[in-house]
Length: 198
Ligand SMILES: [Zn+2]
Image 1: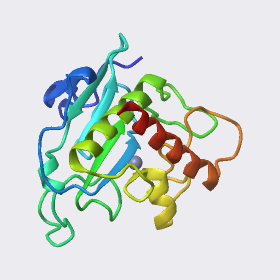
Image 2 (image 1 turned 90 degrees about the vertical axis):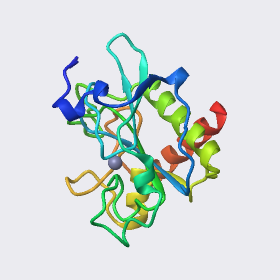
Image 3 (image 1 turned 45 degrees about the vertical axis):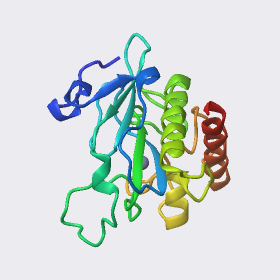
Image 4 (image 1 turned 30 degrees about the vertical axis):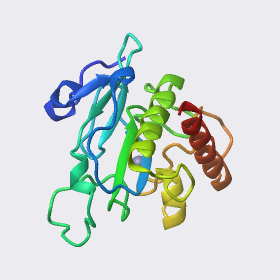
């Protein structure tokens, strides 16, 4: 297991971070959508393209790192695209937060590679999403809280090619071909799990 982050800007200690039990949303403002991702990197590296990164330490502890200022996306970012904001989901970054689990480097649908998703990471992501949804009054439904795969399905770039996205369409590697229905079902499963944490 790689415990060294890719660069200084990818280290958890470069950002405010908490054990998941201690983390709570704390910055009020207009947020209407939440998008969930995986990083497609290792377990140790975090990324400022997301607002909240959910990482799992080698001893198993789940950590939440706040890697981007949430206030930068509390606006229509496309009106002034030159201003800084977290670019987590294509064309959907206005009033929207990006949440991600740190895993899945080199993963394919039939081989999740050296850093596969873990149940603890998924649970952590659901806790973070549910707390943010409650805090910002975002309904936990398919219109407002979706996986990157679901956003890609709606916007025409779902798939496993480099320019496509399938994050969180599947939770365990399988030789079965990845389907659109599986991606929608995975989104529903995550939302049910988010609601169950509240
Ligand atoms: Zn993504």
